[in-house]
Image (cartoon, rainbow, N blue to C red; front, side):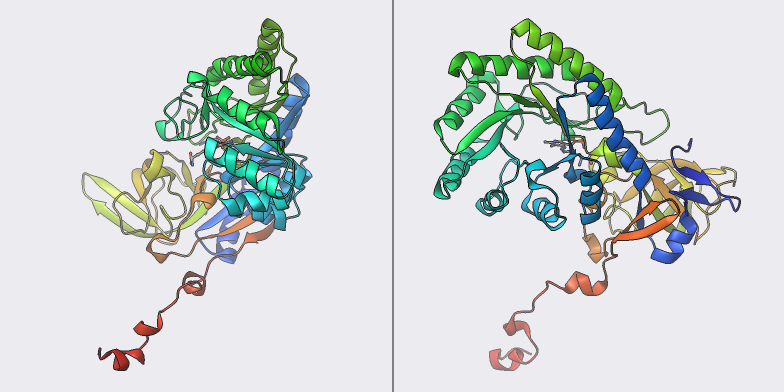
Length: 447
Ligand code: LLP
């Protein structure tokens, strides 16, 4: 695998990221360990801002926090001047606690609770992206009760299929998200939004899918979304000025992946928005884009320690590491493919094709199915690349494994931004009802 960005190899043959020796990181912070390269994350944020500034200056770039959100990440995103897309009360709470500017928050979700909406109203978040009729009514009522006016976008299901894994396609008609353009559902939602004096309809939003390499799906998306802007103008004599096209750009997980950069995306979107607005005779809207994976994905890697190795002669060699589907469920969920290196012996020659297994009690708990690597020994440090997005944020405690720590590396400095969970953390919220306590066995007559 060709190493990129701030990833290097030092004279000891150790993998270095953000100026830090990954073998030392593993020794100091333990494994599994998520490592985030701050320079790389910032570089992507800047590429997004400058690309859109270049091709379509009236664009707000919002980082999609579902990819990876912590207090420190909020600080970086804020300092890069990005907006932030949150999708739950928990993500919103993280942003609140990080003092993220609330007017730069977009709040998504297909089933926001009353409490979540109330939290968003309390903090006057910039935009609430209303997903469905239930929420439209609920939010209008909550805002009316407080005599507050809230700026909203409507989530639209444009009926466009992105060319990606079916689990992460979101824009097609048969989707749990949004108001369909088909059958005038979206127009009905607009009508209801306009009826409420507490909802200020600013625009429309869509998100067609994730890990997209073929960006041509954005062409029909722009056509349909701007077509809807025109229909809204004609039907209600109402100008919606903001069009949010969501996120979705793919990243490089393995050799041969050829993701499209933000420059090409910005150029395509700008060209299409210009063309379609002029064809339809509507003003050019303010654009919003919401990249998540492409900002943080390649900035992350995960360090593991090799443990047991099982040879099945003529069939397969399983090399087990100290993490697995609990820190990276993407392999089991989406057949995602990753690449890895032996971080403590970068110059060692590749020797055999092996499979990297996790340590969960489940056969499907594999990290990499077939990869050519040097001969591995227990204690080797394995670095898996491109784990910055949808790894930490999707981690679980399956098998009661504590979730890994997250370290931010920059210019040779390593800072812990999420502590490793402890066994104590695992039972912190557990309770034993009185009747199951030892003393109560006597009173209930049970031994
Ligand atoms: N905006 C909205 C409304 C979204 O639903 C998403 C992702 C994004 C933005 C950011 O998309 P991105 O730029 O990261 O592709 N867990 C899956 C990905 C799910 C994506 C969900 N929505 C995975 O690990 O591949």
